Amino acid sequence: MTGIRASASRIRIDGESREERALPHLWSECVGAGRANEALRADWQRQFAEAVDLLGFRYLRFHGLFHDDMFVYRESDGGGFGPNTPLPAPVHTFSYVDKVFDFILECGVRPFVELGFMPRELATVTETLFWWGAHGSPPKDMDRWTELVAKTIEHWIDRYGRAEVRQWRFEVWNEPNLVPHFWTGTKTEYFELYARTVEAVKRIDPELKVGGPSTSVFVPDDRYEGEYEDRSKTHATAAAPDVDALDWRPVWIEEFLAWCAEREVPVDFVSTHLYPTDYAFGADGTGVQLSRYADATFDDLTLLRKLLADSAYPEAEVHITEWSSSPSSRDRMHDTLFAATFITRSYLRCAALADSVSYWAFTDVFEEGGAGIGPFHGGFGLVNENGIHKPTFHAMRMLERLGDRLLLTTPHGVVSRDSRTSAVSAVFFNYPDEMGAKAIGSANSYPQTRALAEKGPGRRIGHAIEGLAPGTVFLVEILDWEHGNVAEAWYELGSPINPTREENRHLGTVADALLRYTLIVPESGVLELDVDLPPWAVMSLRQST
Image (cartoon, rainbow, N blue to C red; front, side, top):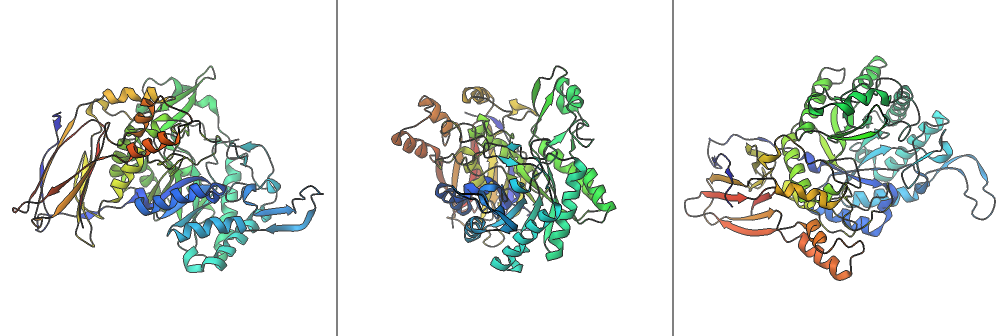
């Protein structure tokens, strides 16, 4: 199939015509996982070790550090079948946490620590969130909260060393604007929790890096302007004929920075989440799922950078501590080829705009809504619960194979060089022109996603890379509808909820069966790249070493 031809270019590797700049790998700087306790599972650990080895992740963030199933904060001895005896003072135990953090560090990864949620015995409100029962509550005793934070960090310094822990990041809470789900207090109560937490951390070591407010998404209205969310202010958003024409702004960020500046509270980094979606409520109370345009993440990051530059904290790092095509762990789009193309496009567009954009999450071993139903249930993961690679896994692997120096940027991919080895690599993709400015959206069932397969046309990628040594071998991998499309293979099997062992082996084989071939540089020293990419294809080119 011959498609639209991308503008051809000539790239010289060994001469003055090369203009290089840095290519930050923000896609592998950090990745997310569900909660701390899941990291005690053997399958989670196998999948994480593989993800680190193949995808190069440097930091890991998850919920539930202080949740009851980690047994960090104890006001009683548990009791068993006997009496639950109160303790004279809180006891902090770290045996479960140590198992998790030891493993993460042994994998060569550092924790991006989310300080939360509230232990039940310290919570003012014990209403729970998620299947596993998180407590999104302010503490009943702020001094006991700050003692919990301090004792935990002091334990880590004793165990891993001050120099190591100074490389970590400490994020205060998760999505506190989502009241009463993730936080049952007010906006001001969160700001006060942040200030007291920062004070406790900096008292241990001023070099430790703390930030927030870890809020969710951007919105185009003032529903979060007050102390609590006001859903009545989303009516116009729900009814808008074109949501992309609205003025989308970050939640709490500007107020948070101003509040902290007025009180001289340190902000080492700003964190938020940038799912390109929203959920608004119509005047009749009906919820409306909104999907934004394909470049929403790029535009949101550009605005966030400007707001930060104009604030009292222009040098603060920017960490997007959760990002994906949607915030639902039952969005069937997560399992698809379309998601792989979308995240490739977005990451390459945004590479210079943040210190990290953490994909949420690396695995479908993820229990916020309980275990998923079936092997491809729309979970966040780059791999499913059985460790089968989704198309997004391969997209991330292709991105990680890029070098750290950018030789060429096009609307459909990049060419790069490794500054250590001088090896050349590239990633190209075909986000179909028929999509226009639209993002891939969300889907409640896998068949709903398949309509995107009709979008086109193909795209012809043509570039000449000069100055290469004759005989140099380049490896090509292509992910497309016919290669590596494991969710489609599962659909063709009849979408079994409980696949047999043979079916799982078949799906694992299909998942990794990308189109692969080699190219050899001729005597001219010029690699002529001329490839027809089908709609939604993602392609990797890398120099064999």
